[in-house]
Amino acid sequence: MRHVVAGGDAVVLLPTGAGKSLCYQVPALCRPGVAIIVSPLIALMRDQVEALRQQGVEAAALNSALTADEQRDVRDKLYSGELKLLYVAPERLMTPGFQQMLRDVRISLFAIDEAHCVSQWGHDFRPEYRQLSQIAEAFPGVPRMALTATADPQTRADIIERLQLKEGRVFVASFDRPNISYTIVRRDNGKEQLRQFLARHEGKSGIVYCLSRKKVEETAEWLNDHGIRALAYHAGMDARVRSRNQDTFLTEENLALVATVAFGMGIDKPDVRYVAHLDMPGSVEAYYQETGRAGRDGDPSEAWMAYGLGDVAQRSRMIGEGDAPEEIKRIERSKLNALHAICETTACRRQAVLAHFGEAHPGNCGNCDNCLTPAETWDATEAARQALSAIYRTGQTFGAGHVIDVLRGKTTDKVISFSHNNLAVFDVGTDIDQKTWQSVFRQLTAMGFIRVDSEFGALKLTDEARPVLRGEQAVLLRKEAPKQTKKDARRDKAAALGEEAHGVFNALRAERARIAKAQGVPPYVVFHDSTLRAMAEAPPATLDEMGGLPGIGKAKLERYGANFLAVLQSASGQ
Ligand code: ZN
Image (cartoon, rainbow, N blue to C red; front, side):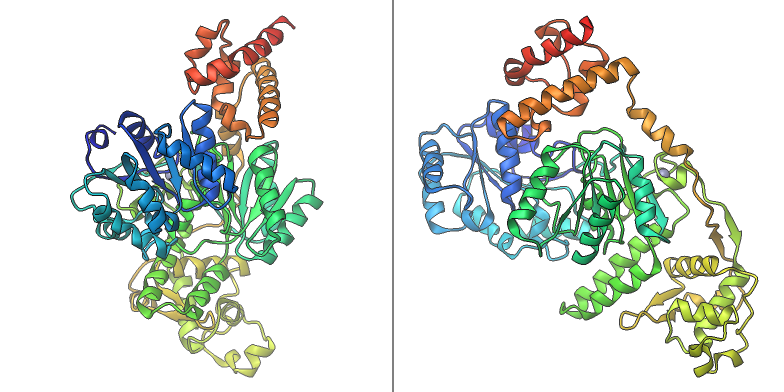
């Protein structure tokens, strides 16, 4: 902030929830003139502007969602010098009309949010971001900032290059999100596994990601049938229903929003308590960004994923069928493999995710499934050799299902028609059950001994498989034990309040809901959960005392302090 206030350019890489927006909001208030904030989505602008206004800051957004009158009002405030922050989409910023307007006012800085959109290596590439490089020439001497919460080293370099920020200082914080716990399970009955996971989060809101629109709708319906309140969200829905579902998610509690990845970018809801994946995302970046939507307020939150080897085959096929150039497809495949390896690792997941972003972590985080319930391993050297050998002998043209049938000596039609019952590997693996064989194939793929062909999902051997085939390399694999639930109780305890404080907390929440509804804003815009919890734990007796609690600034104290104090007083009088 000091660097930008003094007029410098900056590249800011901060994880979600670390205060990325503050990095431009504070310099915007310190410097004379208006700050222009480039933001890709109207929803994102709306949330930020609303939050700033609640704090008593003159902020506005100029976009197509405004009426002509509203647009004129924003323009008047811009010319009169009242505005401190103006949010616009990149398309609007680059129009000659808008640039002319900006020449007549004093600009304090340009902040380009979600700057990874400029890079085609990133997963949210938006071509209109490319033109933002012109700002440097059009407005020389005005500080520029690029900010993002996701950037592997390649994307990082691209942002600096594309936005002409070579002279700027780069600020990188740790990408660790210690309040998010990570769990990745093998999917056997996805919906039922999801239901059990959601049962732990009763009364709270979160996001459930599915790969397809159809699965989104089926899952939402299934959850409602099983007593869990759920709404669907995907790009194929009627726009009005979709936006209504989004608003419900933002303003109400106790709701699972089942969505495709069309949902999420620009959603600023701080109290998302969980993000569940019923299908594996396509890259570690996507996994990190999507799970990162949980727990922006810093409270304990959970990232949970159920996945199967079929996901890897399906994603692989999607890449193969896409029309991207071969070079991009190769990058996409390696990103997919990196995530698959994280799914199958027996080591600390946090360490593995951070390592992908070039950040060292000592491991043993104590807040991922592998650290909380260390996996047992078994010597699978012989099983691995049999598995690889069966892939080789069946011609490297089949998926795991058929190869396992051969190993387990099943005389299916397919086995007979290819005469695979005559192979030396037929019937050699009867001592290992079906599920364990599936686990062997998943882990061998994640370890890089097998690759999944992108066309038909056929398993093929890699060069690394040779020493294992020859029995020269020992292979240790994870045992698939049913996971204990002790750790879950431990996780919930961290967020729990005493019984009395809990009652007060609920009373405060009700007051917050009332105020939020009257103003038509989400509850967290009034106060975060953590602020209400602080009030409930050590109730302030006066407004002055209340002002000392986290998350209560002068403007909010004036606006809401008396209401919440009254709730606390009536709660203590009972
Ligand atoms: Zn860990």
